[in-house]
Image 1 (cartoon, rainbow, N blue to C red):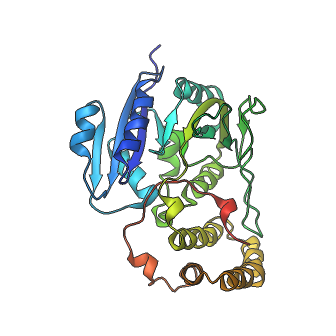
Image 2: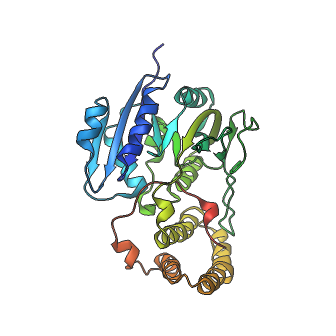
Length: 320
């Protein structure tokens, strides 16, 4: 029986060398039935010639405008023909049987709609035991809008062995069957950066599917090489999308509980902390993020169109 085709989708933004390392790891996969689609999200220098010269097997797409994390990935859907779609950050590398294990989980688990592998931080030089970044997530709390990433910071010593249901997949590496994509639709592009895959998981679950993590598949993640340096821009999108996520997914009485917590705790606490630290750019970004959700959408961050797309959502990073 032939193996189903997997469409592997990754987005590049000014990191062609990092993307090459990912493509090398894909070539080492035991699972050979793949098509690889690289989307360049308006990098300063177009890497098309270099990538196609070294990796002639890939499909290459380029956007002249930065489309964000969801938009960049969604652009590839017009070219993807696989029965399964695997969205992988370009700053990650796959272990040799990763794809085989993910497909097996989706194939053999009735009602499964998405799966992520165990994600470990890319090992530093001389590091012997890998450190877990993601082994699943807890649900977002309906009042505080916070959740936790399971296993984060732990040594990958075998505690995570078997596949488990989880509240959310991780945007750095996630596989979805085509039939689920066609029923639910793609990631919402309004998020631009952060929370888009959590929102997608909520939609997939509402459609009757389950979300899984499969530790027998493993990815090593170099963890947001660009986003770590963004400062106020990161503050803006984390806070903006934290509130927006709640508005989209908790549209009943729970949303009013969150609003009460937002104005009674999150806003005053975050404002005081940022003032005491003298972080005026982050303070401005925070207030513009809140304002965006209540109608004030014509601000500095929304007018910018140069946001890097690396890095998956990290709900627990949001303050308060």
